[in-house]
Amino acid sequence: MLRAQLAEFGIVFPQGVGHATQFAKRLFEGESPDLPDIAGGVIAELSEQLLFLHGKIAGYTHEMTQVARREKRVALLQTIPGIGPITASAIVATVGTGKQFSNGRDFAAWLGLTPLNRSSGGKERLGRISKMGDQYIRRLLVIGMMSRMRQITKNPERYDPWFADIMARKPGKVAAVAMANKTARMVWAVLTRNEPYKVRTV
Picture 1 (cartoon, rainbow, N blue to C red):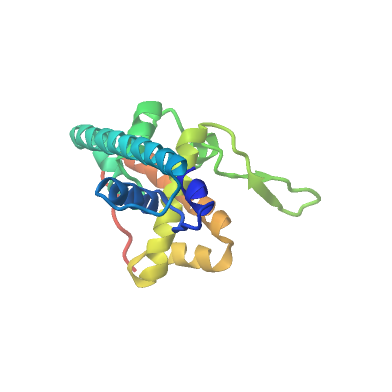
Picture 2: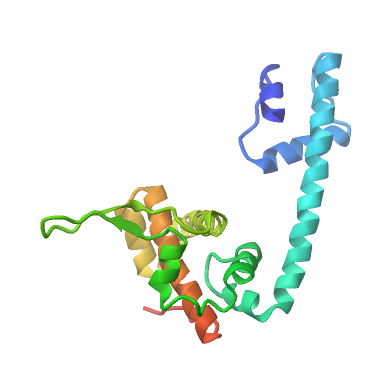
């Protein structure tokens, strides 16, 4: 809303909450954009709401990070690249030890990350992911992998070649889902073995 309102008056900044937050901070530090009085009041109100919410989110994130450090299974999951405290906490709170699943594939399937099998006539055809199971955890994993993809793009030599290869062969969103599928299997292995993830070396 803040970006849209400002754009009406020719003030444009890049997308992303970080840019909006920086604008809001500058506004309350005394920066005065050239706006009509009524519009200026609306912009100030939106900026105040944004900074308030930003502060609350930062506070909750800090609190969750502290809790994650005290919970062993949450800490173990964070040894997996792309898994942060929020994702790890959500997984542990939802599935516990993960031992209700026979293997990593079953866990990934429960999350809706495995492709639907549409094979017929002896020809194997894998369709889109089923999107069954826990939508919140599935979304967190995919978002985490999209963030990791940016890191891999910058330094591909530092990561498991499988990830770089899947990114080279598949469109971005498809690659992120495939990486989330593989990561879900890692999650199951870490939870059931109660051991940290061991980085694969080439």
